[in-house]
Every structure is written in C-alpha cells, then in structure tokens.
Amino acid sequence: MITNFETLTKKIKTATRKKVAVVSAEDEEVLLAIKEAEENGIASGILIGNQSEIEKIARAHNITLSNFEIINEPDQNKAATIGCTLVREKRASAIMKGLLDTSKFMHAILNKEKGLNNNGNLLSHVAAFEIPTYPKLLLVTDAAINIAPDVIEKSKIIQNAVSIAHFLELDKPLVAAVCAVEKINIKMPATTDAAILSKMSERGQITDCIVDGPLAIDNAINEESARIKKIKSPVAGKADIIMCNDIESANYLYKTLTSLTSCKVGSIVTGASSPIILTSRADSHSNKYLSIVLGVFTSSN
Image 1: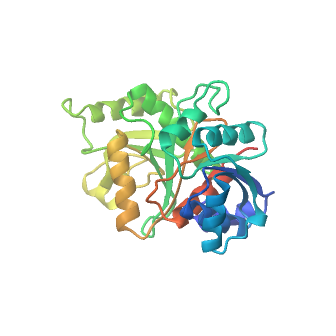
Image 2: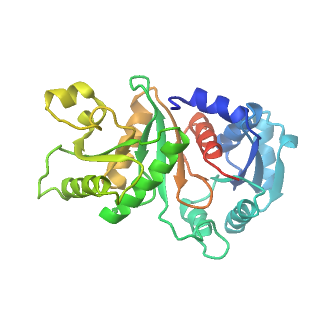
C-alpha cells in the first residue's frame, strides 16, 4: 500500500517519463509545477497557449523552456481541443488545466467527437491527502464536478475513487459515506443514501471495496471516536475514501484541510480515458505539482 507522496514519486521515477498536455499554460503556478515535475523526473510537458506570455513568465522564474514542447495557441477553446487531441493520439498521458475557465476546459473534454469521455462515464474529482496525523493517504470525493449526485451517481463516484485507490495498491479500500450523523434520519436524505450505498456494496452492486454509512466524519477516521460511540464497522476509524454527500460538503472538507492543516494534496478528475489534472486557481504550485504526480501515476498511456 502506498501511504505517502514520497513513495508515489519514487515509483514514478523508476518508470518511463510521461508527458502532460498543459492547456493555456500561461499560468505562473502551473508552470512552476510542471518545471518541478520535469526537474524531478516525473513528467515533461507540452505547453499549449499564448507563447509570448509563457515566455514572459518563464523568464521571470528562470524556467528553461527548451525542456518543453510549446504549441502557440492563444485561443483557449482551441488550446483545450489541442490538449485533448494530444492525449487521444497518445502523445500525452494526461491533460492539465492552466489559465482558462473550468467550463471551457471541461467543455472540450466532454466533446463527444474530439474530447476524452467517449465512453460516456460519469466523471468525478478525487483528492488524495497526506495528513501528518493520519497513517495513510486519504481520498476525498467529489469536491469539484458533481453538484448534487443522486444515489446511483454516488455509486459511480465511489467506483471512480476505488479505481484510484487500486493504483495506490489498496485491493479492497474502505469507503465511508459521511453525513452529519452516524444514524439514519429520514429527515436527512444523505443518511438514507449512505445506507443504500452500504447495502449496494454488501450485495455487489458497488465492487472491489467495502462501503459503510452513514458515518460522521469523526468516526470515519478516528477509531477512538468510533469506539466511544460503539460503532461496529470494518470502515469506522480506518477509512481510505471519504464519500461526501454533495459538492458543497466535499469542497468544505477539501478547503478546510488545505487551509488549516499542514497536509499535502494532489487531485485529479477521473472516469475519462485519461487523468484530468484540474486544480483550483488558489492551489499552490506544490499542490499542483502533486496533482501532476497523481495524474501521471494513474495514467495508462
């Protein structure tokens, strides 16, 4: 089991270096992240965007652009389409969002003819957190894509997160469907959804993992809390994956962890034909770099 980003990085360095297509690469933090990835032997980049702006940022930060392929395309929509084409043609293993609106970026990815989701799968966001007080990587989903998923969509979001957990060498990850409380309350639909997801897992409708819920966040990740509340569950206190009820609760958890703890985080969108490195504009270049690490590690090209 891979429990931290250091181990993940070492495993990548023993493999063939892959390429990341960076769309609208004229972004300071993104360029610093891809520079770090190149210097550490993680990935090289194909920079798509306004070349003069890319060169201006590179000069300001001593980034040697001769190490990268550059495609001059200032139009953001066209740049996103080029990025998808590079991945489809296997000239790149992952695609990364730079300085463009998420809506434009995802529009290109979801294009039925030229995008990266020809299989029609549900896409979802998975963040991997390395938290000093937790003994393993903790996956959180879905903080960026699905606004208010129904129970079937939640089951697909779980399967997407499980696929990432398998890359991290977790054969049967433990999934906590978290709510405000750990008991079913008919006035709190999240708790009934969590119970349904748990039963779906038990009956094989959600595979290759163990899902339990409803669980409050404390008894999902803290064994002592689960003991005090007398919760008997293979997941309680040991969760590998936190399945949040909606985008708001997941986003609150994501930003609380990144803002108030000394954690490390890498995040991607999964479910498409290749990893999609989609980071927040507020993310540091370090978190963007770790997102590249996660994206490259989970790519198959």
